[in-house]
Image 1 (cartoon, rainbow, N blue to C red):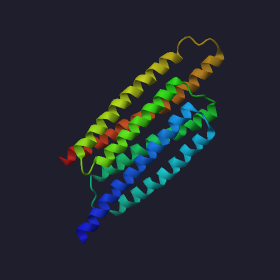
Image 2 (cartoon, rainbow, N blue to C red):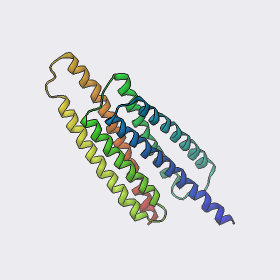
Image 3 (cartoon, rainbow, N blue to C red):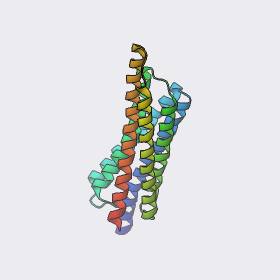
Image 4 (cartoon, rainbow, N blue to C red):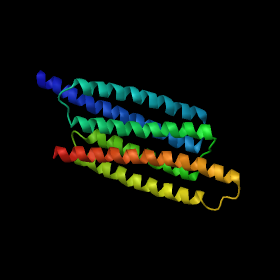
Length: 207
């Protein structure tokens, strides 16, 4: 019975991490939809998803503080939870800033959002496979890192396009606005890359 309770507790951390990853996928899907159809209702959905994910993270931290034995290093659980949370946070703040700065989606933003969704799915699958199939989890982490590289390529292309001879003060203002939005999505990609790194670290420690 004691072993069963311990296994339940261990599974609880994976369950909470997976819930966070599920919310991140949902948020990235809404972000991708918004970049194709900038409807304020879609942005509101991202904000709601982000708040629900925050609650899951609060529960995970509480469980972590009250549990002596964890399935993986507690530092790795904390770090993975934080990175997944940050990915979704950046999605929400990106849409908030687009509304504040009155920025409309463009092909670069659409491509970055689509790749972020793909990366979030890989992180989600990596967490799903961590316990029973760690090598498969690592494969998903590697794919997530490759997607981060592709996002950074689009980010650099977008910046290069911005600085192609602005013609007026209005062009300069628009350039500064877009650069800020691009940077938000690049930061989201960075957090996804760090989440993939943590998954990789967990897998190595399991071997």
